Image (tube, rainbow, N blue to C red; front, side, top):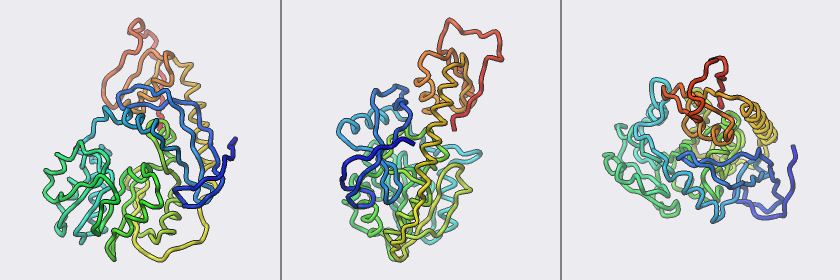
Amino acid sequence: MKNAKVSKKSCSICDKKHHFTKIKLPKLKFITSDGKALDHTKTYFICPNTQFLYTNNNQNWIKNIKKIYSNYELNFNGVTKGKTTREEIIARKIKNKLPNIKTILEIGPGSGALLKKLNSINSLEFMDAMDLNTTNLKFFKKINAFRKFYKNIYDIKIKYDLIILSHSFFHITDLKDKIYYLIKKLNKNGHILIVNPDPLKYPILPFIYEIFSFSSKKNILYFFKGLGMHLKYDEKKYLKNELFLILKKGKIVKKNNFDKKFIYKFYKIQKNLEKKIKILKNEKCLKIRGMGLKGNFIFLNLKNNIYKIFDDSLKKKIIINKSLKYIKNKKEIKSYKII
C-alpha cells in the first residue's frame, strides 16, 4: 500500500493537528447523475486517530458536486429493496424499536420518502428536516407532520427525540463539530439513527459520489463513543451492504479501540476493482445488472471498448455501437456485477 505523509494540519474529524496520510485510489472518473464523466481527480486522506477516509472540500469541487446532483431524479416512493423499499424497512424498525418518539429531525432527507413513511407514527407530534437543497421543500409540505425546514445545521435550536442520518453521515464536513452540535440537540432519552453504505461492500461508491468522511462500522461507533453516544440497536441484517445503527446517549469513552485494518482492506478492495475494470476493457459485450449510476460509471470508464450494455433490471438494452447492433455469437455476452 503506497501512501504518502503530508504536512501537519488540523483534522475536522478528530479535531487534532497531525500528519495526514494520502491514499492512492485507482485513476477512475467521477460520474455525474446524467452519465457524464468529470475530468477531475480527488486526493483522499486518512485520519490516523480515527481511521476515517475523507477528501478536500474546495470551491472547485463544490461546483462538481452541483454537476453530480444536477440531473439526479429522486424517488419519492423510496429505493426498492425486494418487495418493499429501504425507507419502509427503516420506518418499520423505528416504529418497533422507538415506538414513543414525538419529534424527529432528518439530516439530508432527499426526496422525503422516509419522512413520508414515518408520518403514521401514533405518538408523533412533528418532523423537521435539514438539507442544503431546497428543491423538494414543496413535497415535504404535503406531509402532515412536517413542520420546519433548515438549510444550516447551526440554525437548529430545539431538541428532538430522534435525529436521522440516512445516507448523509458521510457527506458531512467538519464532522466532529457538526455531529457534536446535533448530539446537543437530542432530548434526555434521545437517539441518533445512522444508515450508511458499508465501504467494504460498495467498492464503487468513492467514484460515483463525493465522500468527506467514510469508515467501517467499528470506527463510526468509536467516533460516536468519543462524543458520548453508544450503540443501542444494530439492525445490519435488514439492509444488505448497509450499516443500520441506532445510538443513545451515554458516558464519553476515550479508549483507543478503532479498526486499524480498515484502510488496508479498503485499499485492497479498490485495487481489485481496478483489476476487474481492466479485464472488462478486453470484453466486447457486457451485461450489467442494474444500469443506473453504476452502469454509467462502468460504461464511461471502459470508454469505447464495449458494443452493448444489457440491463436486466430495466428490461431494456442500450446500443453503444450501432454498427454492431446484432451480435451473432451470444456467448460473447459477459455477465458482471459491480457490487
